[in-house]
Image (cartoon, rainbow, N blue to C red; front, side, top):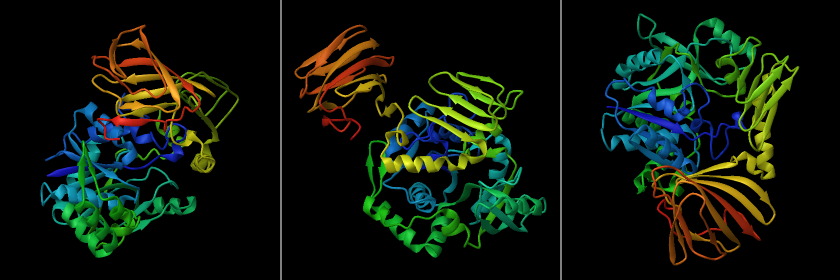
Length: 471
């Protein structure tokens, strides 16, 4: 059977301020795909592959409910393995391989980053189908993207001897790190190099065998971590201490550069890893002046620029080769040729402890979301949306009181000993220190306005007595 493995552990810092630690790019709809996110598009493009089975997603523990909700929207069954901390792709895939072997000793894994875009899906399918025969013979297959230009933002794979007369497959000769421009151009001119897509195809058992051979410390830590797994709702939790002891390494370094079983399949499928804002400018439709405009954007005498508005009007005059991205709480302005340096801004924000690096003004929870509308000292106003059938924890606060006003839908509320059912334009008051709970018994999203008042309004002032999500 063919088991898709989606790797969803990245934070996409080069796409800040849209992509953030708690809501990174794989959970966003950035390129095509309609309303589907990049993670969802990754799953949907697999339809039509042979012997496709329920998949596995390996993700950061903080993103577990985002992954579960986005798969639920697709009505997809999947095991969701939670990484207690990021240890790179080699350990992540080891956990997925161990999980797959519990179902089928001959399982073949198709390993896919969850934040890439492939526009010519039929050609991608052709490449996977070519690779399956090699994978079932024990080979470790990777896919090399035929380069469209000398690109310094990607790693490269050098092909070796041909395995098929039609040029459809080669031995892997060498993996190369991201090069400078002159080196990248020499790679392209040679015709022997491909962009490293980060997509792999191999039997679970073959991968673990090679991992044991070349990176036994990773194998030992992952085996111990997986032996002590336990289920938590829809999630698979591994042993945190054991997994943390694993070296952090990629599949490329740990296995693919060392194995004698590596095979590269070329594919020309209009692939992109959406690694920065300039990539979006390149692949999105441009107007007659070479501009990509997303959202409420007005320009005059602007050329070859990417301008994006998320929450308000963005206007620009007389600029060229620029990136301008606006969100509700941050604005990015950068030269198009310097977008790889956006991560330096992210590092500064992290050092300063700024919340803009981790979350948006809209914060997603397993039951829905909340958005901070006004915050000023001793009071805060939020918009809270609770999805149908969901409920918040039974909780209380030591430092704040809350006033809830229902503006859409129906709310079931526990307020100490009382249970209330409120409709639109009705409200209730939750005094400081009182146990309370909010839930949505209806079939449409519940929307309330919450007014908090008190000496401390932080999210950590929550004492939970009962929570269906195990927090």
